[in-house]
Length: 489
Image 1 (cartoon, rainbow, N blue to C red):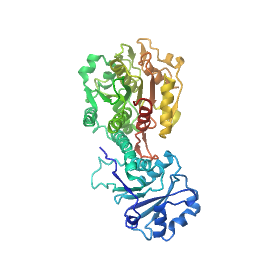
Image 2 (tube, rainbow, N blue to C red; image 1 turned 45 degrees about the vertical axis):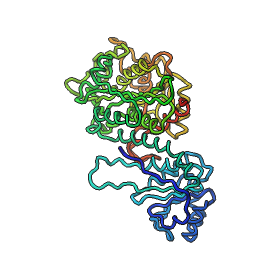
Image 3 (tube, rainbow, N blue to C red; image 1 turned 30 degrees about the horizontal axis):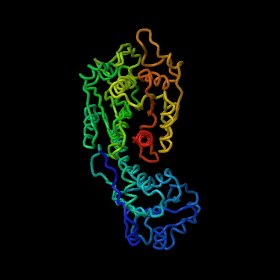
């Protein structure tokens, strides 16, 4: 697994600034306001910071944005990174400032002069999130990120504040690594093994194999994977940090590769279907973060791990499968497989744990990308209070999310002539909503439920604010915050 960069927090030492190598990052407030470290850098560079602060270019910077000065005279550093940030700027701007440093972090490392920053731990968090590189499958020398030293006021307090954020970054990195892995590496067996390894963090982890799934009646899930050489599995992860109350449940779709099955996808872009386990990857990352920071909550994470392949044994359009709930499902399109996986594991986690609420995550529909692009995850819910709490958590963490409607008219389109329901609706319009209606049929009465369609946000072709192109780790921050604010004792 990719290990987040290590950051050392020290009390500000003005005498060490001149000899710091690599990147030196400094913060200037509105109007060029300087703290003690910035004043020292200005003196060492013969007024360079004063000139920068007075420049038109600096005046156009938004909070968290920076300017790079190469080989500054008077410093041993290769680059002086001047970032606009006021002590009173919010957490979002502060993390953005850290990400600007992380984006330029190289093998020589960085010294971050954060004595005048209001949220120094958040600078470190933003830096850590952006200093990510997935190169595990590349050969040849790999350039590691150099060490990072942050000079702050009150190093001990900042270090304590940064510790749970470091655990959160560790969870984000796990999610990104899982989503970035190719399917020939991240098989269902390998995925399960990586989750089992989290027992070392204090998680209870169980792996249910195909014979157990058959005994439980998970015909919907097993039907998806029956054409693959990789065995279908369900992994249950429990974090018990909150006493005796029932847990909150996180449910993830883990299709390690999706060809579409017999309803095969077009070849163009199919290589991106390595990310179709993004929901399971997010659940894994959240569970890792909760264990890493010793969250005072009870949470169960369950993921269904399957591979959707065309084969002589593969599920056919027109097949009828029986879910664990007992409902029969006519499979119209084998490429609408994620909802079949979720149906069984949603029912199982409710039946076994009676959770206080449930959120499922899935790269479920291309239609959600048409509707919302790559800026927002689609949100569907049967409970306003849980939905509003999640949306507030997502907004606080800067993770885009937008609620869409549900209703009986959409649900009616799932009617089947030969079974209790179809796995897709009639017509192509409203596909994401109809998929959510399908899932709602597997939510027990009285269970607060939110469905998150992350097809547009789990992986991006280009860079985002806190990640290079590829897997984003979307949802780990928002779900961690929701659990922290709503469920921790």
